[in-house]
Amino acid sequence: MVDPNEDNSLSFLGLLETKIKSGNIESIANRMLRNWHWHHNTDFGGKGRILRAWKANQYVVTVLDKSDQLIHNRVIQLSTQQTFYIAMVYGHNTHDRQLALWADMKRIALQIRDTVWCLMGDFNGILSSGDRIGAAVLESEIKAFAKCIEEKLATYIYALHDQNDELLEGFEAVANEMLPFYTRLLGRQHVTRDPIDPDIIALGNTLSIVQQLALTAPFSSHDIKDATFSIPNMKSPGSDGYNNGFYKATWGKFSHLICEAVQEAQTVIMKIKEQVRQRLLCLNTYTEKYTGNIDALLKR
Image (cartoon, rainbow, N blue to C red; front, side):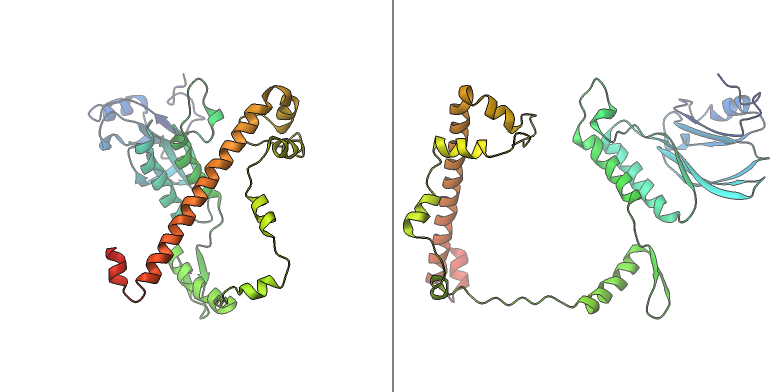
């Protein structure tokens, strides 16, 4: 255990999960951190979660933002006169309450440009399923934290000069300037398509009725085997870990199950296509019958 009053190498620190009530924080901090300046976030209710302390003869610290999950400071080191930003974070355990933390971090990030920003503490969040051992990881636990980090790493154009050499700042102002610029540069897309002429199509190569029926015929076991054995061994049809080499090696035992699964999938797809075709025919019939009378069509 390090004593901040005895260790002269310590001059700036942060404490997490202090669990000190707001009524006791001042007396305890004055006793533990003699000749130090400090602040906390116990004013957000409950027991203290974050306490920041520093030696006033070495740093000038200004609180810029504070919540129940973070304390964000601007710090000036007196010996070098260098300025940097630092945020001490202690995130909540639940996903819903962490959303406010990610929103605060993104908002603060937009305010800090071309300078050092240090994030410290415990986010109580994970970026991948491998970060937790012994318990399941939900997608909702990863998604918000990962998106926040991704947006921070992304490259944004926050400011630019317009054609009159006036400085525009902020995403909305930049977007309003860039959109008309690229519209003028690239132009607008106008696509005019003529309807398909069956007579022109008939002049080229077309399928016969027999060939058309062959395309919609059910897959035979022979068709499925030929398709399976034409695929390289390392290809995988899904994320269950079994590649195509496994299905080839076990074809003698499980071929009937594979063929049944493929044929059943084809049957379901054909039923869906038939339902779509019938609905399109019905729609065309109603459209032709009620042409020029939209109100009657809607009531129908």
